[in-house]
Image (cartoon, rainbow, N blue to C red; front, side, top):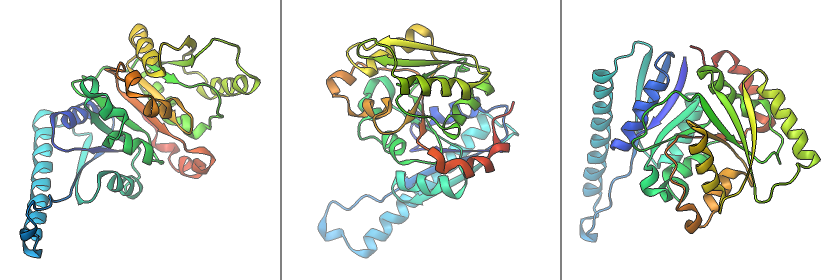
Length: 300
């Protein structure tokens, strides 16, 4: 049984992430946790800020949250009705990122899947949004960000962007390898260089270890020149290679961090229409946790 968390604000963007998740794991036994957080709006008039008024607003927000989750659950059952899938709803008076952190730990969540506004508002993906807040905060499982209006396509081509400057642990690469095995996908390791030059001894060692961990997974190494920015380069590469999913490991000085820090004038061209799979920096400390989850890998 796989445990997947799907935050929702009841928008069509969030529903698109629900559809993607249900289709992605249609042949997998899963428990999906549908999460909605709420914080009651503060009264615009200082004269109405009584405890009674605050209580009414709080009750109203809670009712809206629970009713919204019930409607999402009903829509799922009407449009899908997969016997392999179970659902639990969580309505919480909390900030989204804080509640996700608690939910991931409490229910041993193995993946967070959430929607983004995609090409029409790329700043919402990489600057100050809920999505990037979750990506920066979650340390125990990967986050899969689904662009708005993106329909599920079996990810037979997965790009893994890295610069080989950091040693990878097997536990960190496990989610990527499981996805590739599950979908019988090819992994295209893409290295963006400002100026093409030979790898350093350290980079070469990390590359060889990466190849070792990937093992029998079909994979290729691509070294490409930077086009104006890392984001633009990855966008062009993904489009030309027919990539269905872009994966990154999130750590200090990683491509993921560069994307969040690039000036808007450079990042504005990054209109990716493919899901972004961000793997947290787990390191050696996750070995015990991974060992306990060896039997919970993806299976058809």
